[in-house]
Image 1 (cartoon, rainbow, N blue to C red):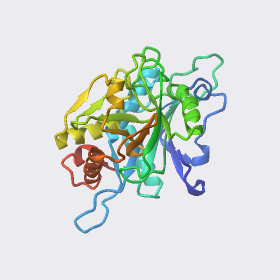
Image 2: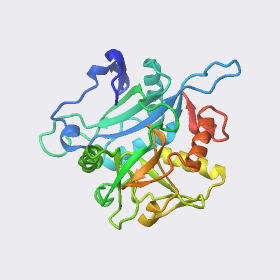
Image 3: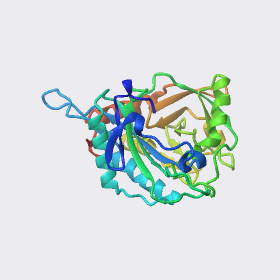
Image 4: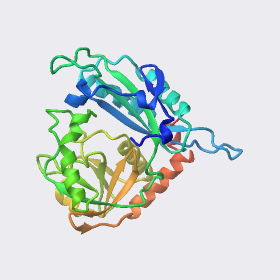
Length: 312
């Protein structure tokens, strides 16, 4: 996460606010040495304008789904969380309020076994929980720079080793070397495939396939992360009247798509301009329509705004 300007920010840690530089764990901690840190990231935007034309205050996009997924990750990892969902939602609000800054921000929740255990397992199952806030580096709902992707066979840790719904640091390690190699060759990211060769996801972004008859295809959640922004964009697609199929997506359906869309908390919607040397419209018509709907939602003018926006 991008550091706040001038180290002036504060971080929520186990119920209190501490200076940004003090929100640390030891280099020999279980979190650092075993990759056992779990996390989640959500987006905070300026609230919809009031009748007087003034912003009503910051809103979190998908607050409850993000915090619930964070709790779920802690449970899957075997952590004994000291905080319930309501307390974590209040921690997000407290952190955002204590860090005035740009209207568009990212909030990261982290749970880390911070002790230095004498063995490979943590000494205590109770994690240290942090909530940090920093400016977003990709404002807006539609990324200005489309993505160039390279596909890689596999690359994702199998779900029987680490469940797809677990956001833990170790899950992302295998993809880092693939991303670095792809970027050295001029690509923005990699697109992972399942063991069966079907579509999986990018390491930190979901991929949606738009067919030539305007259906939206998304892989099943037994092989990919249950992305909160993916849920949001699929909600908007259904509301728009587009057919949405959540199922195994064959690779020929990916390569033969009319449009490819990356969706994530940090960028919302990012069209794919190229996959393995094949060009795609970026943005295509469906991406443009969904981005327009998403802009209405974050402005408080969409029927789904109240479902997805939580005032802080």
